[in-house]
Length: 327
Image (cartoon, rainbow, N blue to C red; front, side):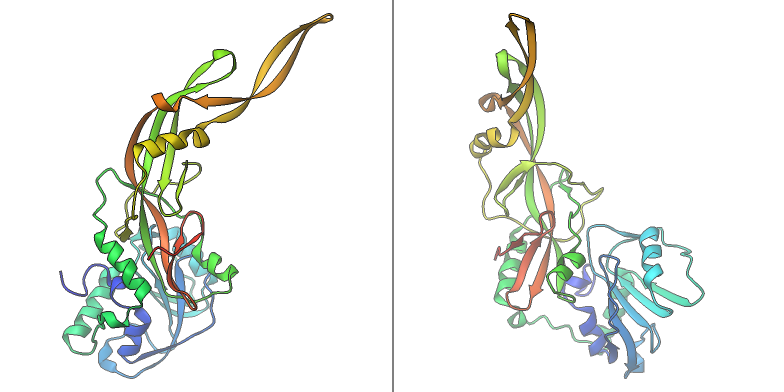
């Protein structure tokens, strides 16, 4: 594979590429309300005509960084509602789905580039000597270097692996904390799904068979029920980070009471002088953890590598919003 093929965002930054090619982009102050699509600014000058810039001076440059979900027609139409009048160049490193013949307002001129368009453009610039990709590892901070080592040790996911959809919107999450434009890279954190089948023991020796789906999240040190987490229909080709250690089967089994047991109302009848009296009492339903059957499978948990101004590269958990220092 060529050095610029595949995942371009892994090696280069689009703003740096534009600057290297003599395409000056000035911030326009536009804050995108469409998560994952950021406005880099507008083109104010093109110093090198040989850069083959596809957009003209004055055009707005938008960048959709790699992510879990593809960009479809509905998302682009929602983005166009907030786009100002003028020429727009959207570079997407996310998969594009069913975007042919998007209805654009008459005051908007739209050019959309896919990841392959970007890779071809960068590749031609490298071959022509107009662009030199900086791969000097000394420019990488110690924290991102340590995380990169972790991703290199992470093996490809098995065919039965599933990936989850983020529960937080990173743009909104960062804005709430006073951040606007930070360097961000989506990643996947390796976890495990546990299918548990067993019995709950209730009052008066009542026994019910149940099945639970639990998620082992080694980065948050949690074993929890699946809950309202949504699964993606595919596994994105993103960096994966493996944990330092996993829970043993005995450790998972010992956690079952705290995760699977429930308190339920139980109807009781008591005899009295005036007749039977019915009521409801809360009872614990206990799991027979020693007899429960457990089967595990791999899952991939969403997250982002974010370069914070004061702390460097750290991971934002895509389900909880927790900041993880996992270097």
